[in-house]
Length: 310
Picture 1 (cartoon, rainbow, N blue to C red):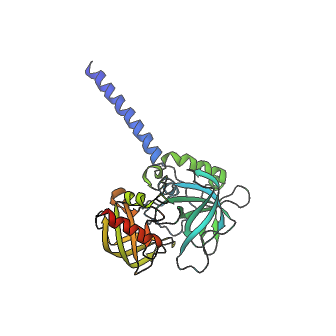
Picture 2: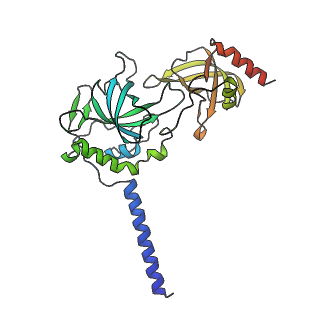
Picture 3: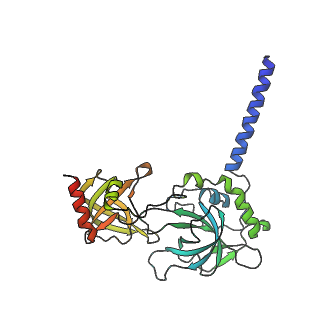
């Protein structure tokens, strides 16, 4: 093979590789952006561990949304709550990106973000963890679109307290639900939450079938006494400080754990824990992994744990 022919082959190969790489980058990082009419209170902070990203609509679709739906608000959080966030019951009308597991889902958001009876296009991130009493979705409060107005028009909520809605995008074409839906679906192949978000498809183990199964499942079993408890933003779980009285299985873990919201201070509990990704410690099951000393199951479990160590 001549030197000139080798040079041509190398050049063609480089061009082909560059073209493929460029196409991949274009898929993962679309250069096209919808210009917003106005941008209020840029957040970008972490919510339930979601990452910081540049504040564009596309980034919120690609990097912060495990699910995008159209849903109608069925119930809102009770008035007078201490927590500034609460749980909304939402009837799913349409799945735009990914399928929700149920027709009615629970959505965590600021207490005044949605109103009963209204229908919205929502950018959501699924949370499925054992300390919470149920799976829920965190609403992206930066991009909330009401879609039950006249015709096919979409309106973006920019002031929840005063219920101010505006046309979202400078290009009026995308202020219609049909066009916005099509645009979002076009971004779906680049949606990173399908690969990076551990809660997107995870199924929480609700309960162990027996005491023996629970003991076998747990990596760590501790008898603890609670010292402090601070509810999370929506009041569904608590960060609990404790001291370890006895370790029945595994090794001593950190002095704080994320546990159910009804855990009381200065109480003794048996806790059954598992090691998850990156060394994270969590309850083994949603129910039955935190047992109060006043619970009838406490003595039975304690006997089994004591007998197993003989």
